[in-house]
Image 1 (tube, rainbow, N blue to C red):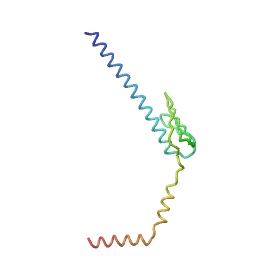
Image 2: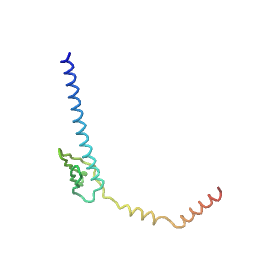
Image 3: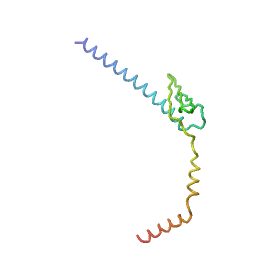
Image 4: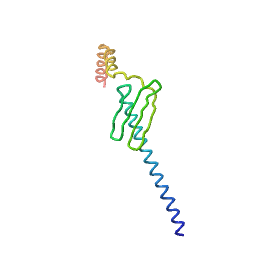
Length: 120
């Protein structure tokens, strides 16, 4: 009876160790992906590298896609994202909106609001 219990316990403990290793690898891969994604989102040049607390990301924007290589303490990961278009400045869009709006339309809107308040 003790031998059967010992075998079951050994099997259970081996499964727990395997699950723990699998979890640790998945967590490390997720952290590497997050570092690569953040590098992609914050890119300012065609190629370069960014250093994080847990590793270093080397990236390059090519015609085929945005390639990243993440080097961590224990392993290396590579991710390929779809090709990036050059970022447009957000201030340009704000300026277009400001220049497109007509002062007469703005005055009419404020008059409409005043009429609605008076009718209430």
